[in-house]
Length: 55
Image 1 (tube, one colour):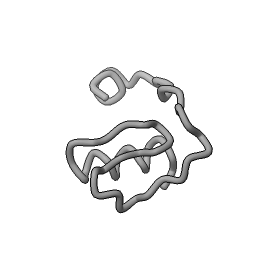
Image 2: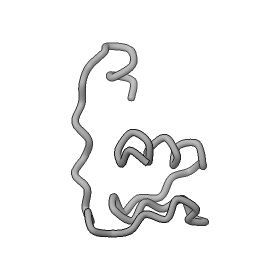
Image 3: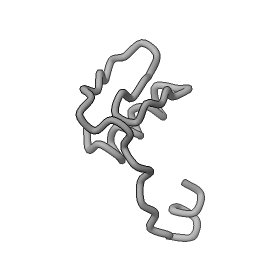
Image 4: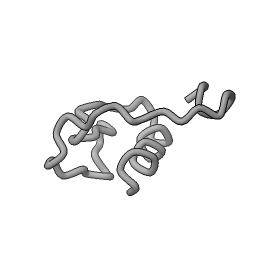
């Protein structure tokens, strides 16, 4: 994130581990099933969904 915003670098997203998984945008553990990753805050989770999955 720092590199992208401060240095205007274009970085690719990390690979999506499970592209066929259905993402629950209201998952209580803020878990992205496609990336197999949980987020610490709702804001980070929502930002991830927007930036990586265009949700």
